[in-house]
Image (tube, rainbow, N blue to C red):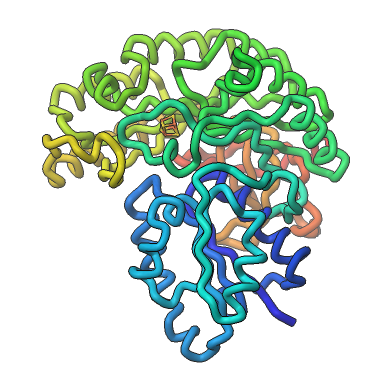
Length: 445
Ligand code: SF4
């Protein structure tokens, strides 16, 4: 029996694409999933070009498969996703033992490319425009209880540091009714949590209907019977009161908002082409806290963007302090070839960028811990994801506000049967990035 293994880098959209890759390999080629690359006849890398680290990891991991290829000449190695879309045939030069290179727009073509490569001809196909609709192909979800549901792909924003508009193309929304019908199918299939996906999720519909319809689709999917509904990634300039009201009024929509700021300096935001000022971002956050009771906020910040001065960075510290994030994803700037920011001359010395990164991390840790401390003694609803990676006797799950919770499994409970169920957990201890608790009972299922 021939086997496959998929290795995914990067964002949720890539994770979702990998579910379609698995579905295609099983249904079209009859392959069976292998736990690791060592036991697979086909290894697929689904790559990300957003961060430099992801690309380096890809090169390291593909290179590490060379000895396997020597042992098993029939092994097929395929590389797809954003790095492949960007690098194309250069990947064959960088990694000569790769057999297939495919792009972000032609995942449905992958089985044919693998079949061609298996007969000895390396296969390259990286179309510039979407030709085949991946959403109409089979998919195998990572879990039975959670589903990624893309409502739009691509992006029209052209942030100066970002490669996504080049690798994923222009923003393309899926028809409203198609999305809702898919959500209904997922709920009927036992999914209790759906995450709506889009590179710029809250401008959903603008390309198709001439105006954003994100709040409407949020409400429509929330009413399919799904227990929890999330969405990523929102752009601050497109965050509307309608969306915030839908979050507050639809019980299924979780009170969690991921709203990347990227910088607290209006000067740097302009250089990033983000389309808002520091004040506008702060006003959006204030409105979100005002309209959505119990809101948890997360964000992204890039440190060391070209030309960032100490004063710019202090503006970022000020913004982070004022936003009271529950979680912040901080990144050291690295230039992506092909972006406008990569041409900017005034790079920030790495020691200075590193120092700023550490100061920022410390500030966020303090504010996240402070917010988590307020939860000690309360009971929260936790959706169980499975055993904790570090301790198999502990369960890991998430609150509606996306906080990671660990708690001992209830005595006598079968851990596998609790996966994807809701538990009431009393919070007993707060840490910056997770909560410790005790199971207090079973919740609605
Ligand atoms: S909004 Fe900006 S950072 Fe996000 S995908 Fe679009 S171009 Fe990239």
